[in-house]
Length: 228
Image 1 (tube, rainbow, N blue to C red):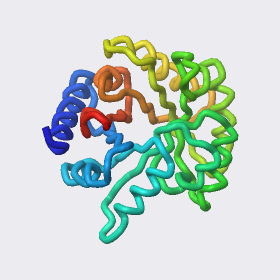
Image 2 (image 1 turned 120 degrees about the horizontal axis):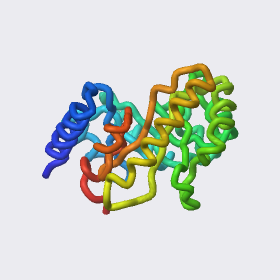
Image 3 (image 1 turned 30 degrees about the vertical axis):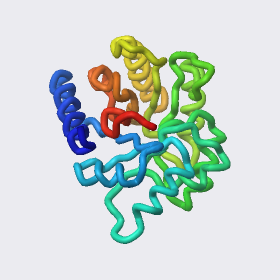
Image 4 (image 1 turned 120 degrees about the vertical axis):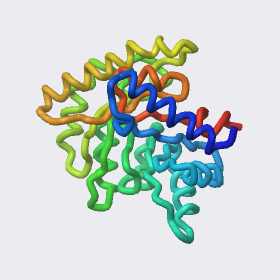
């Protein structure tokens, strides 16, 4: 399948999942995860209709954004979805639509300093599987960190993200997605503010995530094919 055909297939699956959940298809943003894929692959996805692209590495994002901006820049909404090192925040802050994986107050403050006067939307990453190899705050610590991030001028805490432990059966991700939504709902009450974004679900489990309320699904392989 071509990238265009994969994109159309993913769109159809997202629309079907939304219909089953009683939601409009427009309520879910498809973030095409383009990390390690060449700029030509991004151009092919853009031509097919994709607008939101996710990168895991700050330097790779900056390089691709610069290459795409040469000539007639396309309408790309960049998302930074990886673990961001504080010394790389200047490559991302104020340059992307959303930073998905902020897990410390210090990183939020650094992003705010580097945003160039803009307000950078961010998400709090929550490690619901308690995996030592992944970033993200533990669920128990999330309220304290969320409260602190909500008070940082220069960033806007817009919601939460998570990445469940890897599993072949997509249904094994469901408890983690349900837990993130419940945590988001509780934090909205505690903070007295809306947290509209739930970034959860990837190529293998995004339909389950949509059923659980995801607003942003991060899909790489199902759009671009396997990484080399």
